[in-house]
Amino acid sequence: MDLGVMIEGQDGLSWDLWRRLIRATEDLGYESLWRSDHFFPFAEPREREALETFISFVLVAEESSRIRFGPMVASATFRHPSLLARMAAQIDVLSGGRFICGIGAGWNVPEHESFGLPFPSVGERIDRLDEQIRVLKALWADEPANFEGKHFQLKDAVCYPKPIQQPLPMLVGGGGEKRTLRIVAEHADEWNFVGGDLDTYNHKREVLEQHCADVGRDPAEIRHSQMAGFVIGKDDAAVSAHADEIKARNPVFAGTSTGELLDRLRTRGGWLVGTPGEVVEEMGRREQAGLTCLQLQHHSQENFEVLELIASEVLPQVQD
Image 1 (cartoon, rainbow, N blue to C red):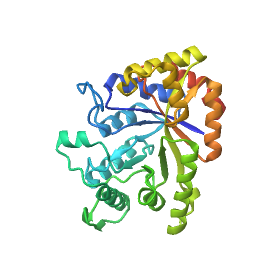
Image 2: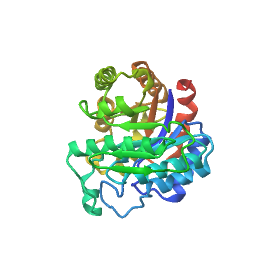
Image 3: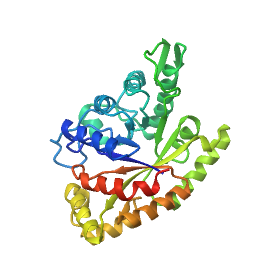
Image 4: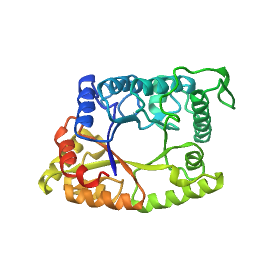
C-alpha cells in the first residue's frame, strides 16, 4: 500500500511550513503529498495563512524529485477548466511528470459567498464537473480542442506545453452513487473515497463497478484511495497526547473528552487510531478490501514526530 501525506492548506499553512512538509514527505519515503483547495479556514479565526493551491504546487515541483502530488481536491467551481488545464499541464512539466489532477464538484458555501463565486445547485455542479473533465482531456490531447457543452465551449483551442504524463492522471473525489461514481467510471484514473468505514467503501465500490460495466470499462483500471485522518503514538499515552493536540487545533472537537474523541474516531469517519501495530493491522484490512493508497490527513501540521513514527514503524510494513 502507498502512503501519502495530506494537509489542510487553509489552516495557517505558511511557505516555511509547506517547504518543511515537502522535504519531510520526500525524505521520509512517503509516496505522495496532497493538500486541500480552499480560500480560508472553516472555523474562526479566519485570519490565518492560506496558500493558493496551484502556486504552492510550483514549490513542490521545484523542491522535490520523487513524490507525486496534487490537490485533494480542486473545486470545479473555483477555476475555468481552460485555466486549470494550462496550470496542471505546466506543473506536470515542471515536476518531470509527477502531478495528479484531483478534482471535485465543490461544496463549501461560505467561501463562495465571501469571494463572490457562483455556487450552483448540486445537479449543475455535477454537470460542470463532468464538462470540466472533458475540457481538460481535450486540451491535453495533441490536436486542437473543440468542445460544445452547456457550460463550457472551446473552439480550436491549443494548450502548450503538453503534460509529460500521457494521460495526465485524473483523480475524482466523492461518493455520490448516481452521478459522481458514474463520472469516476467514465473519466477517472483514481477514485478517492473520503471518510466512512469499510462497509460503506465496499458498497460504493460495488456501485462503481456497476457503472464501469454500464460504460464498458474495466474497473481494475481505476486506482482506489482514501483520505483518512490519523491519531498515532508509540503507546496509549502517546496516542492520547496526539489526540489532545488535534483537538486543540480543531474547534469541531471542542468539549469532547480525549477518550470520547478516540472512541468516536475509531468507530466512524475512517480515521486510523492507535499504536503503529494497530494502524498496520487496520491498513491491512483496507488494502484487502481494495484500497491501494491512503492519503494521511495530517491535522497536527507542525508535529513532524508523528510523520517520522509512521515512516519508521508503519511504512516499512505496508509498502510494496
